[in-house]
Image (cartoon, rainbow, N blue to C red; front, side, top):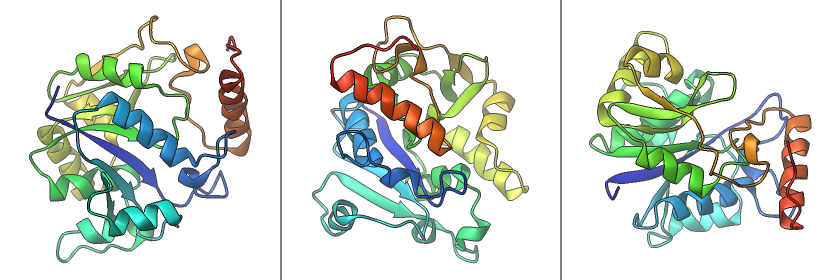
Length: 230
């Protein structure tokens, strides 16, 4: 679909990880966010720009600093402060987490449909995201994990779904998964034919050092040409 825009939720500080997730280094030395940008570009090759949502206080490396200053980089970085409406605080301490990241971009592009990927899914593949795009139906479509729960931060969000999320945040909420449920959003399982590092672990979400080391072991084995059964 040519009308879907890729969005990477790079986030900000991570208490449990004790360091910014987006700057974690893969076994080959590549920052995690750059790996995820490549995956999104592969899934949406027709899209000239990938949006990156960062908390206002998120540290950036040389690549991100250059992207900020280069309008032809193919990467547009949007911070909470840049996208906050007049009269609303942009204090990171008052951010609504992933919901704020989604809404930051939605405020600037209210008619766009976004392929959303949170940075902390290191084993996601372009083929999995292509499956998600092909399965998309209004108002929102996301993957369902092995436990049967939705993964709203690996999904396709329409303007209507993002407006509902905006209303939820205004009421003091801010749960993307609740919005998916309330709107009767579609949940799809990763197809058996979608292979990649770790196979069945495509939707692995990392929040701790131990989980990150586990994901790196899978990715490192993939680089060496070894398929791990996990």
